Length: 341
Image (cartoon, rainbow, N blue to C red; front, side, top):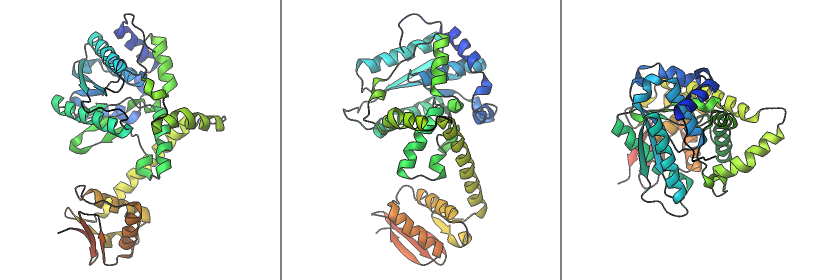
């Protein structure tokens, strides 16, 4: 939905906030806003679509004391020609009307046929740079409840545990105390669109979202509608959101249990004796975390990971290749990393 007429954005924001009071937002995010880490600038990912527009308007309306510290970040992927430039102009106009600082970036290495992953990586790199520039630790994202269902279906297809199926999280802590916030996970996409229309807000539509060349688009256009239709007596999207919450709780419990066991030995060691007799899920988690701690130098295919997991559970001496980087070595009850010479 787009419209070139003059829009009273402050009035629109007030109307939208009446439709979606603070209590409709995710409670974990509301709790974060009361924390000490919420005091710095707030950066908002703003594409101009319905979700990100609703997010920006609600933040502006519900936290008037934060308006002078809001930063709207727009990334032009340069993949849609004039339409992409029009998206940027729309976002700039909204921010100008609201008095919100606006920063735009562009993908200099954009190319025809770019993958979804490439575009996302370029976008997130821009966001990270702007967070550093603004000395902000908070990035607000417009993911809503339908995104939960799409992500769940996508990750089921590749085989994910509770960590992956617990995404997207309302409050996601990243390195260096950065946090990503998704307050709209309690609201469905059609609710947001209806609320914006009722408030008199136009928004930008990305025509590429209607194409089937990206996996998420195919899930959104074909799988999710069929799933909803197959369960007419149930709210499939709300069910997916509840499943995400429960899996995230389970994931946090396993992480806490692993931390209590304290199996780590320095930066590169794992005392597998402390994991003896523990559930396989806990040992798997410890091994995943150990691999991540190897500064990205350790890589394993799924079959290789399962073989190493079995060796860790048995506690047997092992030397297993991790590719060109080095070896995983189990000796005297400890798992360590040895670089290749």
